[in-house]
Image (cartoon, rainbow over all chains, first blue to last red):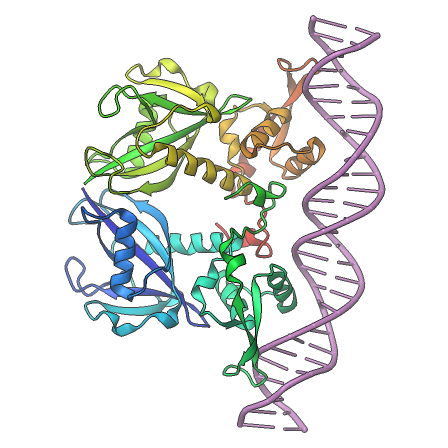
Length: 226
Length: 226
DNA sequence: CCAAAAGTGTTCTAGTTACACCCATGA
DNA sequence: TCATGGGTGTAACTAGAACACTTTTGG
């Protein structure tokens, strides 16, 4: 039985969520679009395989990478019995350089303009989207998609994009500022407006110390969940 | 590469959370306690394998079974390279009959009185516990551990046991009743008190229609999360 | 000077918490 | 009759939601 790893790689370009896909240069389904994947090698753990595969395509190390789900349907790969351990990654799209690896024909696609994908990769993407929505509602992970410096309008677009909705600007700002996670910078981003919007950075200490958001079925659930 | 499935099987006896473990009758680690597991067969999906393994041990079908995580460290199985797809199950402990399968020496252990487990099974159990806490804070899944009819004192013990805390009885009752998920029965459970506590049943319609609890990072997140 | 986006406060509402006494019954 | 556990209401507080105008500045 073969064990493969597939990576769902998310980016955000300031307007929309993107996925990094590759055009397969090999059979089966040659020329069709698919997630970046590969087989787990005997000398590496499954997590290591995921990191390797991600780095092969993007050149990036130390990115947010989380195991999503293992897909093990009987005929998901028509050629050989393969189970796929999927991971989703959140990367700063600005750090990605197309030229890093020419071995793969990789391209960013907007989530709502995706080509058909091979095998059960569409299902994987759907699950990843869902997990991301779920997780981002509770944990401050979306910042992994932003550059080091970002503005509140960008931050709000990031959240609005994920949930496909609009939030009240005042309430949004207040809620996020009240976490104490953000440090205002002196400079402004002046490209997207005349007035310009102040940059913020994450308070890395607060960010890395287990920040938990506010679940409400259990009183003070942040006490209990790790 | 071998692909195994391991099941973390939870029960609740009215007082404490329990795990169903088996004493291995085979090498390696013969006689030691472990999770119930087995290899994925060529003719079955991974999900099917999990259901099969669970049924082999408990005789139960259609129980709550959710994929947890895939463990793929290099030397997790000292004999052969094996990756383990883990699932956790929630079963009504009263439905379990010890005699269903004598092939395995199975026993329920309280979560805080567990024997040493083989390989990385302890890590699996920890992760399952955590996932259960997490999930139960947001979704009404703990009822899978209760018999069809249960009392509010039992329900509260169930939640207090999982989070290892005490809740205010009045607030607890109000919050849970306000979900409209519970139908009061005419009869009482009279074993554990003189006065007796009314039985309740789940409103199965409400229960099966995607009940979502109340996350609070995103306004009205139940609109967005599936 | 005006169009476009940034930034900022207050009020109302609803949900959460804290808290204590009476009830029913078997022994 | 009393010990044990079951059942219930209210008031204070807090967090979330709704809502609109002013500021800045490049063109």
